[in-house]
Image (cartoon, rainbow, N blue to C red; front, side, top):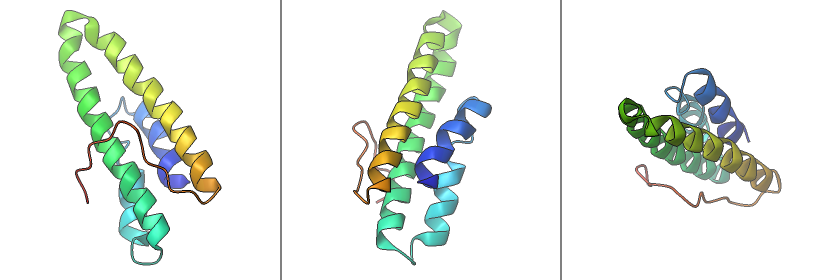
Length: 105
């Protein structure tokens, strides 16, 4: 659950830059101890990388003012999907983010 709930908090506090740190640490520490925890941390890490790309695009588009709206959309998606993932993982169900670029496989 920490890998899914930690990133939205860090992302909002750091304007989207540090959200990937929590799932990265969880994945590096627990990937060999538990297959389920490792899989969910990797899924969360991939989602945070996807969000980081979205935040970067919104920062660039802030020059034409549409980026402010896009940043808000990315932030809301981060919170909503993080909560949905945490609820699913709390029930010991594997969660797959609907919008995700799987960089780490």
